[in-house]
Length: 572
Image 1 (cartoon, rainbow, N blue to C red):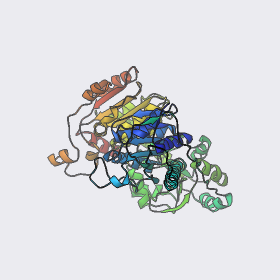
Image 2 (cartoon, helix red, strand yellow):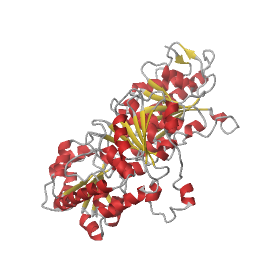
Image 3 (spheres, rainbow, N blue to C red):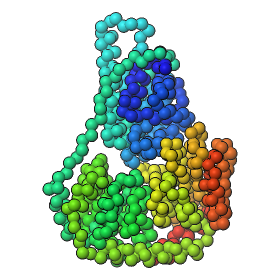
C-alpha cells in the first residue's frame, strides 16, 4: 500500500478512520491529489468519484442520512468548494454530519492572480459548526537538522492535528457539517511506501443533559391541568421514538398528535394529514383547535397552514424537545428541553395523568368526515397531479424508502396516508429543490432497501447531473411528475398567472422530457399521460431490477391548481 508523501494528507485520513468516518465522496482535481491518493489507496475506506461538486455533496448527504454518521467530501481548490454550499446549508439545518475537506493554495498565493484560487478560509462561516484552517506543510527534500525549523514543523503539525480532531469530533458530537481547509504545496502526486505519521487522537465527548424529575414536575403539573394539548412533530428519522410512548399519547383524550409524512411516526389516533383536517377551518374552528400547551419535536414542519394557525392562535405554553436547538417558529416558545425525544418522554410521561377531555374525540370526528369527503373527491377528479399521487402513493412497495422532492411533491404527499412500513425522507432543512435527486441517489447507494424518489420536473431537471454517477443501484426508481413547469406557482396566490410574464418568469414553462437523459445515463424509461397508463406503468416500474428505472408522468399544466384548491372547498 502506498501513501501520499505529504504528512497532513496521511493525518487527515488516519484520524477520519480512527473515528469511524470511512465513506468519502471525491470530486476530481489536482490540488486535492494528496487527499485522493491517501483515501483511495486505503483498503478501509469506501470512496466514490463524482465530478459535479454540488451533486457530490448532496450524494454525501444522502449517504450520511442513511449511515447516521459523518461522510467526508473532498474537492480541489477554487470555485469547486463553493458548489458544496447548498448541501452544507441543508446539512446544517437538518443536523446531518458532513466533513468537507477542501484543498487550498498556500496563503501567500491567495489574491495574487493564481488560477483556481479564492478566499477559502471560513467560507461557510454562517452555516457550519466548525472551520478548521490548517497550516501549509513543506515537505523537505532531505532530513532537517536545523532545530528552529524542526520546532516549527512540529508546532505546525501539532496545530493541524488538534484542528482536525476538533472538526471531526464536532461533526460526530453535534451531528452537522464541518469544514477542514488544507493548503498544499507542490509536488502533489508523490507517494511513499510507508506511513510516516502517528497523529494525536482526541476522542469525542458527549455531554448529556440531565433533567431531574423535580425539574420536570412543574411542567407535568401544567400538563395535568390542561385539557387541550397538541403534540406537533416535524421531520424525524424512522424509529426515533419507542412505540409504547406513542401509544400513551395516542390513548390520551386530552392530546392531539399532529404528524407529517416526514415524521415517520404512526398511531391510529394521530393526525397524519394536517392540511386535510385544518385546511378548511374558519375562525371558530381555529379557536376550537387552539391548544393550551404545544409540545414540539423533530425538524422543520411542512404545513404552512398549521404554522399560520399557531402563530395567530397561540398556546399559553410552547415547549420544544431537542438535544441541540429550538426554533421559535410560532413566536411563543418558552421552554427548550435539551433531551432526545425518546429520553424526555420516558421521564415526562411517568409524571403525567390522563385529563378528562373531548379534545381528541372532537377532532377525530372531524377527521372521519374529512376522510370520507377526501375519498369522494378522489373518485370524481379528472386526470391531474392529485390523481397521479393518489395512484402512486397507494402502491409503493412495503418496507422501502421513499425520498420526496420539495415544493409541490412533498405537499401533495402530506394529503395521503402512507403505508407505515415506509421510511420517508425529504430535504426540509432549507427546503430547496436543488439536490433532491442527488440525495436520493446517495441514499440508494448506501441502503439495502428499495429506494424510490418522487419529484417534480423542475427539481429533476435542475439536478439531472445526479444521474452522472457510476454507483446507482439497479433497483433505484425515479418518478417524475412532469406538468411542464413550476406548478407550485399556480397554487400560490397570483393574479397574473395567465400572462406570458408568469409563464416565463414564475412557472418557467417548458416542453422537456426525461427520455433523452434516461438514454444517456442508462435508465429504463417509462411514460404515462393518463390514469390508465399510470396504473399500468407503476406495475412495470417495480417489475424489473436489471437497471435503474424512471417513470415520467405527464399531467395538465393549467388544471392542477384548480383541482387542488377546489379540494379544500369540497372537504369543508
